[in-house]
Every structure is written in C-alpha cells, then in structure tokens.
Length: 488
Image 1 (cartoon, one colour):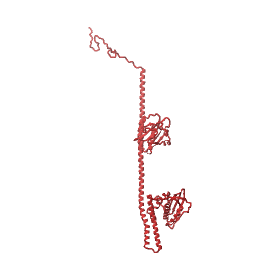
Image 2 (cartoon, one colour):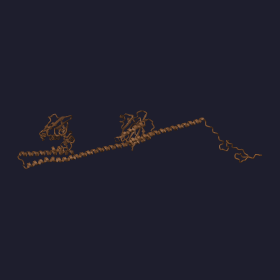
Image 3 (tube, rainbow, N blue to C red):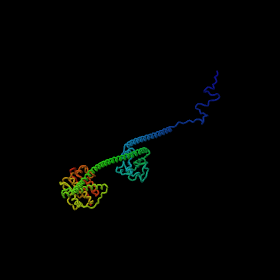
Image 4 (cartoon, rainbow, N blue to C red):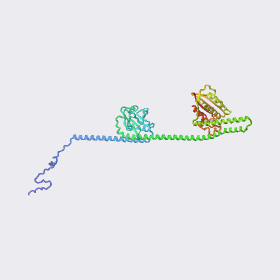
C-alpha cells in the first residue's frame, strides 16, 4: 500500500517545490538593517561604577535633605522666637524694655558677640543707646548719635540692613568690634519713613545674612511698631500727667479764688466798719464843738484832740488801701539810697513810743550802735515797715514787752520785733502775708485793722531787696517778725 501524499495545506507543512528558509533563531534576510547584532553582557567593573554613582547620588540627596531639614528646623525655631518676642513687645509699653528684649534676642538667637540698641529720643533730636552687650555700660551708654542721620560724615541708606564700612565706625562705635574677626552689621527699625531706632551687631565677618534676612525683616517691623507704640504710650502718659497736674493746679486756683473772694467780702465789710468808726468820731466831736456842747475850754480841746486822733487813724487806713492798690497795679515805687540804720531807729523811736499800748507792756529799744553799717533802702518805706511792725506788736500785746533787736550778719543787717502777745497758730502763719487774711472775723474784729499791713511790708521789703519773715510757737506764745537788709 502506497503512502498517501502529504497535505500541502496542513499547518506546519512546507509548501511543495520549496524548502522552509525561516528556521527558528535564523536571521531574517528581509529585516531592515540587516541581521541583529548580539549585545555583550556588562562587565563587573561597569556594574560597580554604576553602583558607586548611584550611591553618591543618594548620599548627596540625603545630605541635601538633611540640610533642608536643618534649615527648616532653624527657620521654625526662629519663627517661634519671633512669635515669643512679638508677644513680649506687644505687652511692653516702655522703650527700655523693648531694647532689652532685642539685645537678648540678638545675643542668644543670632550669635551677636556684641551689640547696642539705639532709639530716637529727645523729641527726635538724637539716638540714645538703651541696651548693650559685650561692652561695659559706662562705655556704650556714651554712644549718643545725632538724628535723623546717625552717620552724617558717611551717608548710608538708613532704611537698609547692611554691613558697615570701617570708615563709618571710626570713633566710639569702633569699640563694638571686640575682635578682628568681627564686622558690624546695621539693622534699622523704620516706621512710616521715620527711623525709630537701630541696632548694630558684631557678627562674624563674611557671615551669610541672606538666610536670616526674612527673619530680620519681620523683627524690624515688629520692633519699629513697638517703639512707635511706646512713644505714643509715653506721650499719652505725659499728657495724662500734665492734665492731672493742670487739673490739680486749677482746683488749687479755684480754692484760692474762693478763699480770696471770701476774704475780700469780709475785708470790705470789716473795712467799712473800720472806716466808719473814726469817721463817726470825727463827725461827732466836730458836731459837739460846733454846737458848743462842752463845759469848759479844756473839754473843748479834748474833743478836738480826739477828733484829730480819729482823723489820723482814718488816714492810716486809707493809706494802707491806697498802698495795696499801687502795689497791685505796679505803680508803687521805691527810691534806694544809703541809709544809716541807727539814725533811722532814732527817728522811729519817738513815733512808736507815742503809739497807744497797754500799761503792762514795756517797749524795749536796742542799745545805740554808732558803728552800724549803712544799708541800701528807701528810708521812708523802711521807716513805714518798722512802724507797722511795732504798731502791730503793741496792738496785739496785752502784757509783757515789745522789743526791737539789731544784729549784724554776713553781708546783711537783721532787725527783729519780738513781742509776748497773742501769738499765731501754726496753720495760720503760712497765710499771714496774704491779702485780707487778718479779716477772718477773729482777732481782726477784736483788735481792729484791715489786715493789709504785713502784705504791704512784704512787698516793700522785696522791692528794696530785703526779706521779711515771721515765727511764732503758737497761740499765746508771742511772735517774732524779722527783716533783713543787705549791707552796702
């Protein structure tokens, strides 16, 4: 039996009349480029080199990552410091405290080896050092710089942080460079185009400040606003204190005005009474004489003498009022000349001896001093002052003595009128030289007078270059009135 012919269409069978040229793995003569070339396997050295390169790249990236982490940690710490500083500055209303906080931050957080913080003071006239580090206080406290430009000989951009050239820091500022490895860095605090202050830090030369510039910028803004707010707070405090002081002065003035008004009202009432009394006596005695209502010539003469005495008293009261009016209007005048005190006392003695006084009062005069030096005074006004003091002493002394004393001091003569009279309360002594103070309804009504005598004496002594003062241990303890005159 013959074998059946092969099926030319059987899958995998070769076509008749031709052989199969495409064996597995054989090159395809129709593939573009020709037959594929076999790739040799990499050598061990190449593999090792690739691993080393990959290792280096990984190490570099790891280092960069660590650097970024460090920078991030540093920035995070700086932001925390800024927040802490901002909280302190917001709660600090005083410039000195702001400067102290800044100085501590510069030293601890930014590694400043020395620093000084200045703020604008003296109403914008100068920059005053407020805090310092690395130098004795006695040294940095003297570093006062002019405003608005603290470096007038070497102008710089005042609102820009920068390293200072050596020529700028010559002089006192050069002491901040505490070692040759350091340079000075200028950090301004600007607010609304006004240099509120600045700091100068001693940092390592060549230090890269770009990384910290953002931190410094935020800090500068916070500090400038804090200093400005401290200015406002201080100004408000000064205005408040001034307002309180003015309010107190106004209240004191109002009290004084009310008291003066009361004194004036009482003075007018009392003066009216004081003027009416002698005037009534003058009119009464004159009427009696005119009506010839007297028994004899002696009684007539006595009536005329009483009328004359009342007239003199009335004239004295009017003179006091007129003198006070001249003093208040500035028309009172004194003519200074050389005055011999012994001669003046001799002229005063007979007048004062004739003043009315109690029989129990002795008037004591000092022993003559022919060698007393001359004083510069108005003789008429000085005599008026002495007579007024003696008259008051005799009027307010019921028993005892009224004594005049003379004492030569260094460059001045002292005259004292010492009495054993009613004295003056301690609380009333400070007001005794005020107008109308005697017109208080007490002794003034019992003893008479307008209460203007000592006021006039005080003004006259001041116009003549002298002084007048009073001392009393209290009511019933007598009084001592002292006047001093410069020796010619």
